[in-house]
Amino acid sequence: MKTIVAAAPAMDTGFLWLDLTRKCQLRCSPCFNSSGPEGTHGIMERDDWLHVLDQAAECGVRRVQLIGGEPTLHPDSLLLADRALSLGLGVEIYSNLVRVTEAWWALLRRDGMSLAASYYSDTPEEHNKVTGRPSHARTLANIKKAVELGIPLRIGIVATAERQRVAQARQELEALGVKRINVDHVRPFGRGAQGRTPDVSGLCGRCGIGGAAVGPDGRVSPCVFSAALLGVGNVRSTPLAAILASPAMAEARASIRSVFGKGGGDDEDKDSCDPSCDPNAECSPGYPGSECGPRN
Image (cartoon, rainbow, N blue to C red):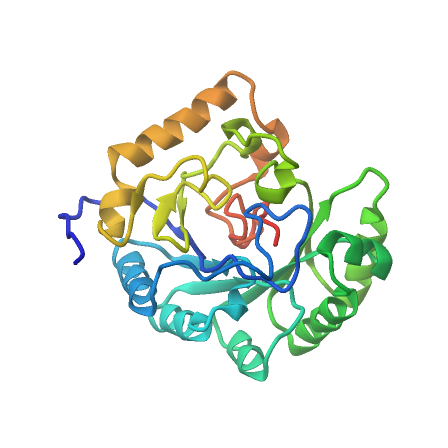
């Protein structure tokens, strides 16, 4: 039985990641939450996610991003995107674009929807080495289809190796008509940490400012990258607004800023990430518009 705590006035959180699942067809080396074929959808049920969306709209959230793992593999992802749109929220789906169903293409063409994806190289061999599967052809074909359909699209290129064909990948995407492209380095979380202990200095520095994330276990954190470090409450027992306005969230933001105030973290991204812009803007990995984005 859920415990309900009286909600406190929420701070201005305009963007929310719905981190739906750890299941993914791929096993990308930079994946910030180590998703893969063996992953699960967690313990959040359909009604839990729907309740989160209703609360988000009530407390001033304007945009959400469905992410994972591969969010389209979650059995309720279409329903959740539709509910968010019905609530007047902008919705971005962060997909690997390995498989996009006709139902998803239809939803992506609705007003308020946008699409984001990761891309690693213009050569199949290099791209597939990062994803761990022969995924390049499918992802590229679906990027082309999204452009042809006029779906708002942004692509994040993650540089996983010093000699990776990042510039060539950007040129290829630009030639296809992709307008929003950003390049990021591997964030030291999940598989991207390569065995190192993740810490706050690997964040961009603006986590929790205008945005927050809800994970597949219901835990709320300042952003999807910080989920393993800074849980500040759980929507399965506490109203979202109360968590966003809680001392725990304020303390998490302060702990992040204290590191950056001492010169830690990524100074370049600290200035470019703005959760008020749209998802790749992202330090809302995925909020149209920022420069640091989460990678599947």
